[in-house]
Image (cartoon, rainbow, N blue to C red):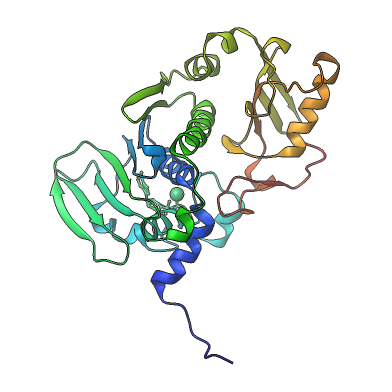
Length: 314
Ligand code: ADP
Ligand code: MG
């Protein structure tokens, strides 16, 4: 038998990165979630060439103290969990402390950040497996993360990426959904220099739908608001006019987190059955609010799935 060894940190990080960072959209999702957790009210996402060449996410959140800028790139470094108890009532988007370490294992990363109590900003730049460089930089309070040349050092992963336009489409889809789940936050999304959408962040879901999906869609909505036994379901349902040939615009959030949940989506679809012709799928944006301790968000490394204590009941 070959000798049993503990993997070196750089290799362990690359393996973990495989679960967290599957493609450019995963990076965008993680960075935007960090911005949300930092209390940002304005988030700008800019990508080049499907995010493979560059992804940059800027926020006006809390920023990161200078003495923590290298720590945040270590695996399991997080400010969001302190005790095991916290794991069972997670209210932040992140908690695994894996995103920044994973991303920096498979791309070149530059972090620019400043907190309120520091006069001058901090820039930290590093490439995979090399020593980070820290310099002073003038900047606003908040954080910008720039990720360059994703997977340049992991050719096997690179091969699984699709055309730039397809990777861009994945990002447009997910970012739209995150923006819809946070109508009180202003998002600006730019691809290869073109602004794709800007949301005002006025807190109105219908306005956000208008800004992301356009007028036709925003005109054909019915409000929904229902509470029973501590579970609240609110949002909008599309009329038959805006039903589509696929399920791309079926959006479910659980406590504000966009998730994939086929069972819940199917329940809504079933309710539409008599209203839609075969092959048409309803549009809906629904937020399900349940007490944090009745839902487990720690079931998937990318945090895109959740488990309810009682799914049938929900
Ligand atoms: P997690 O989000 O699970 O805690 P990450 O690797 O995504 O793990 O981030 C590590 C830590 O870095 C976070 O817990 C947070 O303290 C800090 N951080 C990351 N991004 C930002 C940001 N945009 N603004 C402020 N702090 C951030
Ligand atoms: Mg995170």
